[in-house]
Length: 390
Image (cartoon, rainbow, N blue to C red):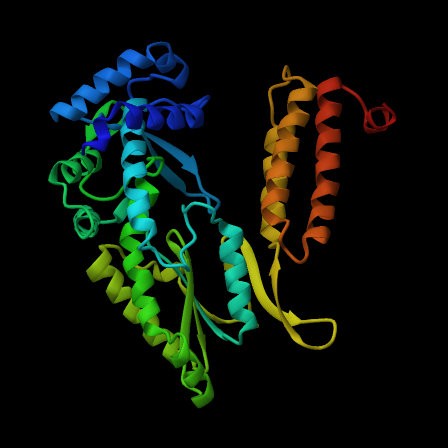
């Protein structure tokens, strides 16, 4: 707790938050990063004194609903800027402690790790003759995760009661929906600075549970020689894949049931059965937006591949239409093209590791060209021939 009200610590947290928050939505107090910077020194000193005296009280989160890929809506909880600074200060204190405890097969919301690393780890396991995959998902992890499970995991490493009470107050801050404040009895806000770290702290228990189900080092070599089953896994936030070798689908189903019980009892969350599938690597499975599958290579050997799913191109085309065509008529052509280019760049940077990237990118390039052409035709009141000629 002493770190929380150190001037240099809170100032460093403030600088990081302001850098990320420029142009972002404000919390319930409607204070933006630009407004906060005007009176930064005064506000920081006031916040520091509140933390030191123990009078700091976080404000409720502002609820915003954003659309999901499946047509449903995802609730975001946007904290006030001063609460973001406190959360960043907490994250700066906790991250070095728990980074040393996190499993090496966990990739979500960790320094110098990404979805690409998680996908390549899956590829490595598929190349190592792991045949069955349990593709799992935690049901509404951020919304349903137990506060008691979070605080219990923190207490294993943190003995400062005032610091733990500060985190408890942030978890119980409530959420503002249409002007009415609702209490939060469970879950961490999607949009909170410290939320990903807290979820990783709890789900780290799942990582080590799965680690204990596998064999490592010399025991792994002995198991391979004797034909004994083995287990490996990869986790990115609440999405995870468990790989099994030298076993059957029935064994995989049994392990899935054990994972379901463990998540309920130890982590305070539920396994999403409708999103949890057991598949063979040759049939392929979806993970983190990629399609992973073992297919036949050039020389007739089985080769694991990362592919761009067809729906990834379809979703990108929809976003391009929204960025360039479905815009107010008075918006300039340059704004449309800049916005469309950002969509293409983001899509390309994410899927560039896929084996069929060139083919998928060529298809998207075709769609992007004609979407831009139609947008310019409507904007400038031209025919297609006139637009192409210009």
